[in-house]
Image (cartoon, rainbow, N blue to C red):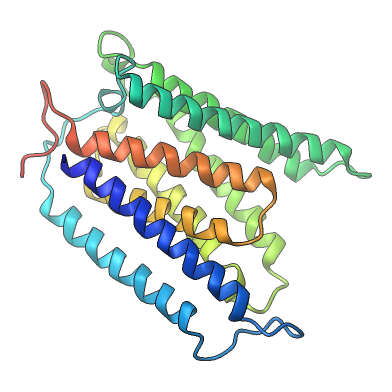
Length: 260
């Protein structure tokens, strides 16, 4: 099995394990009356250890992985690869549906929620950005640099993070929502570093670390109580990053990315 595919499979498995531990933590790790965390809760401790060990594993993996400096974003996303094209398309569809749900809920409120409306529009814009990635080919757009639409996902994540924290800020029990914030932060940094490939400052190791950590936390936080649109967002970014990073690491051809 190729290294990139293996890393994505490992991340998926570790993420599912994290979701199980998170579900157990949510079930038995908080007091029913106050919502405060119960000290010494085994699933909570196990999840923290799992996240730390996985982070160390990714750091070591990223350090040991070498690559040429000149690699462009689109070279990792050729439209002729049916599996990647399908994965990116499904991820885009999930993101777009989430955006539509955000907009619909914002408009149905007694007082229209402008912030949710903007978040929905951002999500749809990000979906368009992801599907354009799937349609790239080496003959056309890959010869262009500085595609500013690659910045739409990071800007979307910035706004998403603000709203996520705003909705949780009044809750003094940070452990109840910290994995959600970790997920969004890592997704933000993953998209930021992935975009760096087309701006002449490729950050390959950072893309690997934050991309896989984003997938791990996004899968883990699915065990929390989220609205359907938020669940779709986490599924979308997880699917996209797992396939993108696998192809990024295993990319072969005119310009090899992986040399170890």
